[in-house]
Length: 179
Image (cartoon, rainbow, N blue to C red; front, side, top):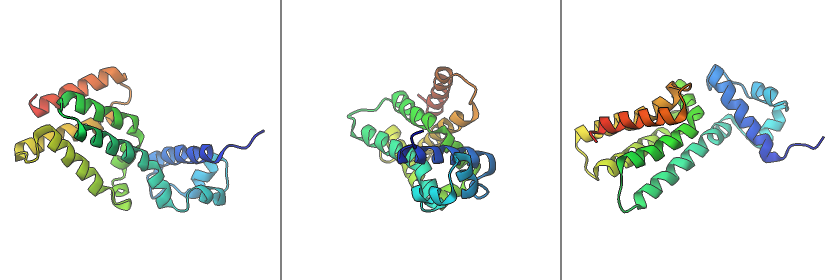
């Protein structure tokens, strides 16, 4: 039987880590347990991820990369339709809902990886796209509720069909924004 390629093993490690962290939390999920779930030794896990922090960063980085790419694309667009913009953001957060759930269950992940500032920056960038560079307090709060609610809905309504959830979430977010 051929051995899995390194990238395949790393992906299996990430999947097992997400699953175990969802069950136990970040601090309670041991690297030994993750390695056992994958069927490898702990030293083999360290070959792919030198530390718990590196593994966590490997879990979260795809979300970070996708959100940064989306925001850069939106910021370079000549105009912005709120529903389309929020729809694109919903799609990214939905694709990475397991990561969002992990962070919601254990917010220490944000601090552990110094991601709180990045997430705050994303929300501020979305606020600026929605309401301009100097939004009022009312606009800031509406944007915060709308954008935060998008991520929450992807995690809370896991049994809802995607299209139905997307439509309902975008309707609610746009209503919150007053649009």
